[in-house]
Image (cartoon, rainbow, N blue to C red):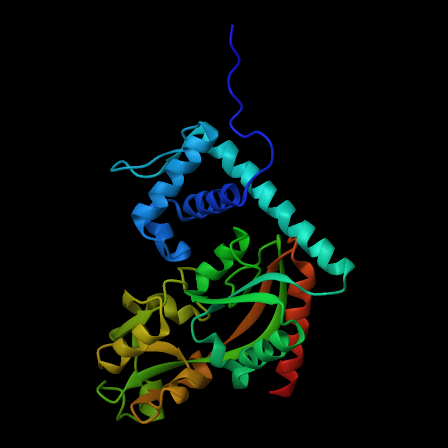
Length: 310
């Protein structure tokens, strides 16, 4: 009776760690194609890496093809073990760094779209100060749709997320940062543009078409009257909503700061601001169980300091 060979014997090599990181990214992206942007690798290269890892481990890790991407039982075990391994490596690195009182390692910051220009570019100023005080830290900055920021922090894909969360998440630590004023706009090409404030007050806005963010789901409207509005289209990104409002066919909410930054104050008119205006509060989000707390705490401290400068 023979013995099954051991897939990994001796020490893990750098290539093993690299292959596991690629596998982890593919799993979290739910497929090879979706992982191309994250990894900045071609589909064929990622496929070759996965095949190399499967040969190295002597396991079939995932099913991939026309039927989609699915982990095998062994693939799930390898993924879970990879999370433990990579977290342990990161924790070890931070422990050693702390012992030398020298900040090193990686910090990944994700911002919701257009956040970098908020509050007198305080995030940009914080990046400058952080990199000056911690020059050996590899800082990565990404921008994505607001809802995706929360999901990325929850999944451990980044260390800090700056966004407007639509609900609280127990596993996340939140720090209030700055506010954003949202106003209801019509464009110069819209019938309401030439009407006075008193005229608009007497008009039923439900007679007009609206564009809204998919984040504003039913039951989450800041005002009851909005439930009766004719929201005929949705757009995740502020730029897309602004373009649709500028077309003259829709009413919709936009950040007043963004309207000013883009220089379209003469083309867009806020309506019924005292009735329908509302405030978004941006927060810095991080996992309570993160192994990267020294860098997270330092960046948040620097960020808060730069808020006060604004």
